[in-house]
Length: 441
Image 1: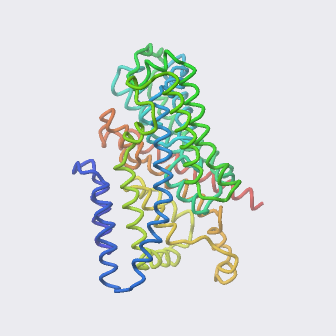
Image 2: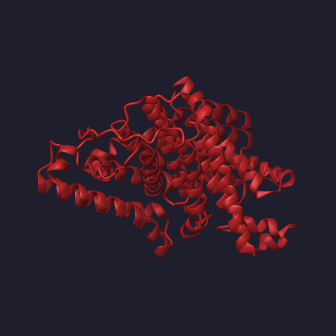
Image 3: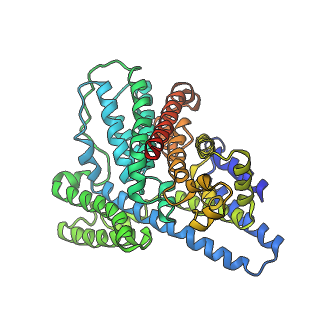
């Protein structure tokens, strides 16, 4: 099973080389791993274990489908153009700081991939020089990845940890906001030194996004969908805190309310035939291969957990390293090579949330305290898995998207950007250590 998983991992990591969608290998790996497990164990309970694992995984999948549909709908009504057209700067250095700031906070509400698409597409209309755009796009990738790490809904990995109660929304924000800011400020400062403070070229007014002509005619309509959509996304963590129900229930409520609003809007403004302004139209455009990839990879990791492979790995790490900073530092570096989703999923299965009984029974209670809900280990894991992906262009969905839009070479990123992202990564970890040190004092 481990050999199959490693081969599948490599095929997923080199998606950009072999040009076969990573969802293909994730789903194949998932099916093969569960088949091997069933054939070897001959345990009648395997089918029940599979259903339980599928239920846990589908909580995340349903949430993602809802969130991606809302984001797509906002975009169709030109809502993001309202944000984009208000971005101004006196010179290119100032523009880099503004774009990084916007990407950082936008990705905490949306996701790093959507944020990067919006920001890089806008960048193409602001800068003519390709090498200059590459540098700006890479800064946006770093900012988007760091911005998603401190918000419970900012990245798939934070969503996973938050939904399963490894971290809570308030503690996550309080403990990781400053380290994530530090992980962006250092690379942006270094990158801004590489460009001249020349005036910014005029922004091309022509916008090709679906529905922009409608949004120009009905500006209030764009604002309405933008506010309702973002409000629906922000409603989810509040819903979870108030009811204790899983976040996917909150996103389904938000989606249904937005569905009702858009049905009334389409009917009132007679938009049929002009834009696909209904939820049913937005659903057709969400990235289903990505959804299926998450389904496959999470179910594959669940198979390794059922086979006790992850438990054995956790035992080895505890005995060989026994240090949360080193363990998570390694995980962060690995997340720049392979997808951070299976890494986090594996850690969640390797290290369960520590209970009071587990702490008392442990030979090292102080170490075990790092694994309680909102413990040091989980905050470090959230930061390292999210921010570490910036060290290589293929290390995150945001990086892959920017690479595809701007044709950024892998080696160019490695020579020019990797060291900046690494310095920001280390500085963020140091900031987490300082925060922990102050709390202990």
